[in-house]
Length: 302
Image (cartoon, rainbow, N blue to C red; front, side):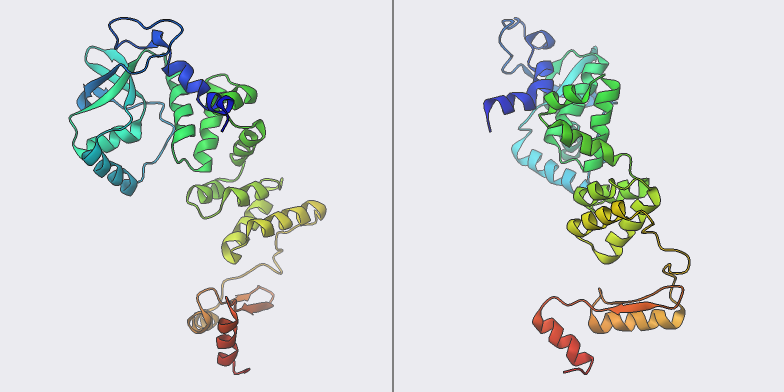
């Protein structure tokens, strides 16, 4: 990675964190042209309040417990960053995951950089650090990009420079927020990938987006297959959405039992599909020649 790339990645955050004028832990100010190397203080956990601008909306309990165990053994490798908002009172700027894990670990105090930052600067610092350092899902990244633009007055070009990403990459994330809520939730829960979502978002009709999304889940379509479907739809606008005549309908009780028997015999991905007009098919996928031979034997073909 080039030096320019490294500078670009840290430009937004380091400009706020590494300015000597923003640090109040040092008794003698550092020279104007040199960033501070340390100035870390131990602060009681009870004196720190959460960051109201925290963009990360969920912290997995298992991952948090793992970090807490690590902190018990090794301590906090990377101090959190706080701002002083009163006598013996601080507010997190960044490092909420470490802060929460420290509470789980039972720590009474934690190392912290103490900074002075206004609310907008604090929001920018929290968002930029999370985008760069945390394992956010694609929707959380998109929301963070949107907030940086709307609440910090950044253009896509400004944002590109601050987070070290191409404008096209940022635009692709922002487009995800135009998808129906059902599809956004599926992205967050890892039921579909960003590749799937980028193909879906190319369709301009919500019902078509949901139609292809449902097919991804039901048929386990690959990203390439979804891209092909989207391209075909853009060339042939008459509709991918099934009409009432051919729409899939719930299986009656007798056929539900047949469907369960098919799954038990041929595997959980095998199924009976029936449309409301009575047409349908039985799908029995196989994973190898041996698996195919097993299926053919069960069908009494071999």
